[in-house]
Length: 319
Image (cartoon, rainbow, N blue to C red; front, side, top):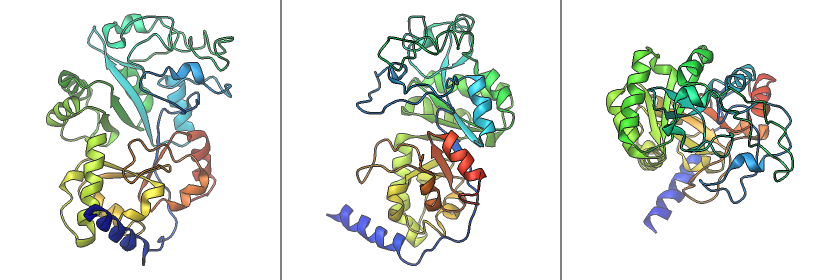
């Protein structure tokens, strides 16, 4: 009951007296970049998404240099990529824990050399008709890049690097990898589902923005409890807050002071798509241009549809 009262109070504070203060452009975080779309129905961590794609409208494959360049062309400011350490001391940019789903290879991604991973066809396993045809097979030969190659191709664009494991040693390796390449502080955001890798990365590379699902939740709760009375927001410091557009009224000062309050502790704010539940576990992307009007000045947009949102921003849906 106490939590419900707090949420209702914050809802009222967030709704009353705050009108959008003018128009503004928003940094776009392109989750997956330009990629083959697929149904999210019944999706689990074990689902091979390449086997359920929609009929292809283009030949771009996520986590590849051609996709990265097209994502930049469409207006992305931040691009999410997935990384795995390799046995020869590099980091491969690839989504899946194993190479069995998308490629002709077999085995755990991190148990391979970068040299071997470069030989694979990352378009091999994509099918839109249950395996009758594979329209992208042979289109992705040699396209799995190293993180160094992606950093070079990013050409000033910020990368959101998704650490796929919860191994503490991976955070150490990634911090050393970025340090060796003198990657600027504002060009990297690091995300991880597990806390061990994130904690060691934060310890060794405190200059970068770092977050996890748990840290987003903790930041959001602290903001709702403290922001209206100008209380501390230490759970948000140097982190990221992702807010589903459906939950915007729960955040005090959403259209006026929220972004400034979070920026003051070096936290970045992104607005995602609608989500269910008071505390949504995994908000989807803000993929409908009609929702752009609900994004406050200074906040970024977290989208799965850069092909839609990028042109909408450029064409003045929110300028």
